Length: 295
Image (cartoon, rainbow, N blue to C red; front, side, top):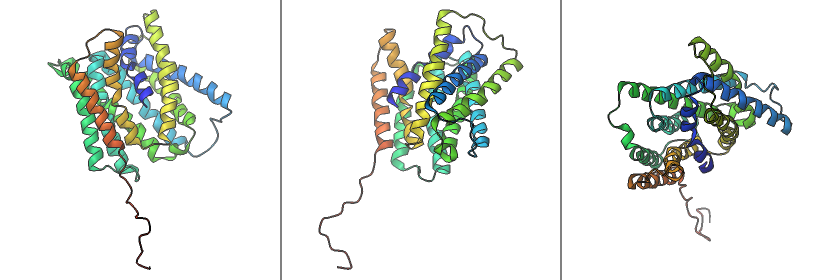
């Protein structure tokens, strides 16, 4: 999860940069198309069937629709607000994941300690991005709203996977549902709103699109679904709060932007939050040699 978050930390920058040369929703469709081709080749190489009947078609189509809507809102939000503001509102998703898992996944009930951990981790993100929240324009507020909707739909896909038969599927097939369905939805929406498509395919635009296709939509999402078959959704979702922190840290390392005391405090709060959410209560101790009532 830490490795995935380091990749995702650059994703908003990748989208915003590629938006300069490719229309937002059309770009999302290209991303899904390219990743679907890579995934199909990977599944063929592994000898894992994608199209066998297993009763998952309806829920798989629903998953793909939720995924498509999430990225429509996310890519549009970056047209109206900066990457820093967008990432802050997008990463309210762990709260919705925790609430959804509490309701729909019996084994993932929220506890007081987990709730405190979530709040602490998100407080760290707010501190890190505090400057980005000052004096928003109406245009930025609309972008914030779109990013917030994207967070809700992202959380919905996570909970749907954990609460349905998708949790037992090969992660590749689960991801293929998302990509394949979203291709049709995204290109249809792009055409319906009259997007021009590819307008300025500069090396930077193409490079960041390839990064999204290969690293984000193929490798990282495949790994994400694999993790979801093995770990609680709320635990994984809390780890994702590292992503915006990685984004800021990358700016400090790669772009020589200042790493402030607020950023250090934010990292500490996120780390504490992750610890609290993942903390396992020790089992009741059994004293060796203790007598039972029957003895």
